[in-house]
Image (cartoon, rainbow, N blue to C red):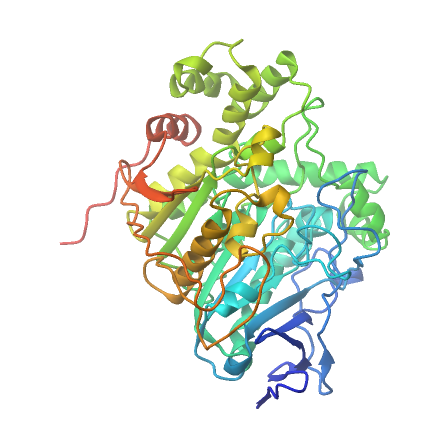
Length: 554
């Protein structure tokens, strides 16, 4: 039974226990619902345990604690001071659903995993300002709910607490280094058990994510542990093949174990059971500080903590699993932004530093392939060095891996591919273009501060993209989904409203090399994949030539 009187706070009676939420504009939201026990003490570096059921109504009117993480001064990932609380009791999730659908058990469900380089971020990440102070969360699911989708966002362990691989942990649990991935699996199991109480259908779950969250979502699409938990996958700016320079893409546990041993040494702790026991007593703030995301390319020190191909949570060779069609879903939507890496590069544009970055991520063989893949104006070492390096990094971290992922998936699954090209005026002025993460407020309909993200076409593009994502979650091809259930509401500028839907949009499936994609801009359209030749050259250089397709059964 679910209580949804308009004059009272909604109550959802889930199998885990009753939760109370809030209502705004016809959308019921429940924030900070715990899905697992606090992963502290002996539960650090162990698979999560399901949260014990409760009997009294749980107040879920505010976002829960976020995972421990460390911020540098001026860090764009840091929410305003005082607007968040960090705790090891961070395994919580949030649900948005049409008020009248509570308890119906029939709506599609979209579960979203936040990004942040596996070391930062949260499901309550504000777009601008403080969420507690009235600011809107970047991943607010209200607009998706207006289109008839139950939206779920979640927190998971980060940094060393989420992705530290120790041999002792592997001996105990048969897995190591994927604690954050296992958290996401536990959240998906919670969704399967409980989502009907919020009006969602557990048989119609789509899993999505952005950046590190997209890597996690696509890894779960090939995880041996995730069968039956979701039916479709969305990957924005990241896939299981997006980190070719890191162990996850090579099935190399030994490298991950060496990093784990180095982390113990940094703290003056021994290897083995004694070291793990001592590590379980170290203050979580210290662990977060030591594993903070530090992409300072002047030091050439990329992130150290990331998912590991352990053969249990993540297959030993994700590329081979994809080629063999060993996937947990048969519908994929994926893409990247045109100027992915403009947000990451050092701004002084020192040619020597930029050349070092290229060699760090591509290596000599990749550099040669990059010359062949680049347009003539970027082939010379001294030609437009900042733009050249931005393109090289994008190939290495995002775009070539997405192209290969799409090519492999298109052999056995339905695939829709996109590129996000839209760049509001101030983003162009800052030479950021269509940078990493920029598509997110358009997808979630959470546009704010008109001076930054507004511009000709922004409002319409947000309506279109939010509708397409909702349409994909509903099932079948991504076609615009209009407002459903009679939900009304003002919504922030640029968000879809009842009676203010997007125009029709035709997005053909990607059928492999030579296929089409959607390009999102002021004049969104379907067209052949831009830079298809360059992406193919770089994918071959990084992953080897595309293996031949298996013959179709007679």
